[in-house]
Image (cartoon, rainbow, N blue to C red; front, side, top):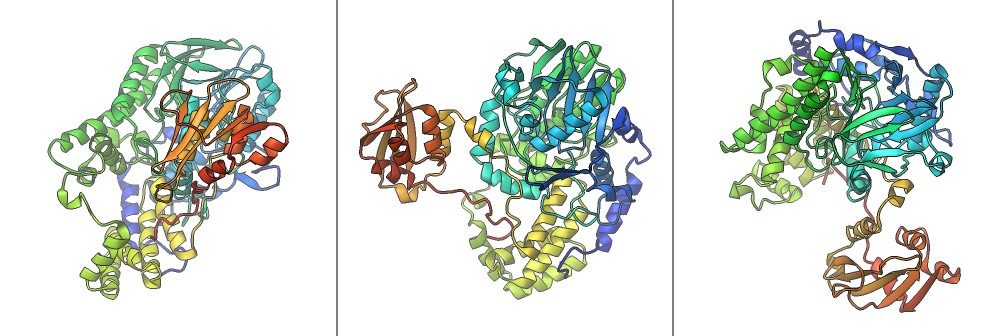
Length: 632
């Protein structure tokens, strides 16, 4: 067994070699398109935050210039090499992209006075570096508008690196699809701790970058680790066909809610014959259910919106570009790309449901699902980020839920309890590990991972089981074409060998918390209530907003924290009433201020027993950003 990363076993190396022979590596159009329009890149390879910490390293993936080693799937190696390319690129005159400065692309569209920035990356530091690169080649043009294509953090988190308080105060237009703010903040706050912890696995942030470690995430290389910010939109796009002009830049929008994000849009630039597909059509099969966790996306609508995009804009589009990867030039190529992407999601949706109605379960469908040869031959349909396997299971989950209909699995034991029983039934840990070692030698790493999992969950301190499981996960990672699967497997191996890596990067930031509505803020508190410990509690707090607005009543009863707006029959009589302005209320609820200090400073008035507020907040728990994943 390996105490650290080892070589690929023969069965993995042979499978990767077979993929090299089987796949169309003689098709080099992507390699040419990825470099097309290159204008230059940054002179300094590292991007640092204000404390000097490196948040992005442009040279970190230089090892990808070498031939693919046995420890990586050659298709993923090819994709990772493509997404690692960095610099400023001209899409068409007037539209430019900075690629390779973060997981996502930042697009810059030149207007009459300045530039419209589309999707300013994850972090302020990388976004600022991207804008500086653009200006070095195209001149010191001011930012005259910002556009968020959708509600994921890699498309807005760096906004204060391109536009600060001065621009916002001056009325900088910030455009986004309807529902953007609600979904952007709720996704990153409600289940944000768990999503960020699992994102550490998905993007492999703690893995060493190299042939035996992290080589990319399929959609990009990885996520930056700088400062996440948010400037709320000033203009919502509410309908397909809506036209807006910003700094002389004409745009026609197509709303695509429920596709890759709950709030998303495509943008046509009629003066450039260019279509931005946000994240609805990229050079990979995307996720219908991302491994970090999210709501299941709708592949039926996803396909329908791509058909609509072709119908609306196809006759006037000569280039398609997106918020990840490289553009597709030429009308015929662009329409083929959009149509194949459409067929990809439609096929997964329709064929999964066909098999559902034949009685197959999610895992069974995932094993049987195979793409048509015409789609399989297209590089951009490969599962570098999403996968056919976990997307088929996601479609099953969307329609059928967690239960597969077999009553034997209706009330199964939870993992740790089941594991102890499995190991006992299989003759004890020693016998299970003896047989698992044999399976490892035979190259059946999926089975090793499944069986040894039970030993680990029955006895997480079993050193032999930890070592064997780490080795099996490592081999599964080496053979994965999917970047996020590779990162999950290798991060699991890393944690088994070295302990928890925690959450290297989190999308929950001060700006994100400040963007919560009061309803969302109260909801975020309700999620933190320790239900069993508060079964017998009955506490009611009423908030009066000194700066106007309805009263808000919070009541903790039956382990549930309910909030009611106004003074109707649902608002119970309060134990304590507190009058303060909304900024003070936010500071208090977010733990930034103390009620006694607010009262002493004249910012709050209290009627009733203030200790009742402390009693209520005493029932709140803190999320754990370091919870175990590969052990119980």
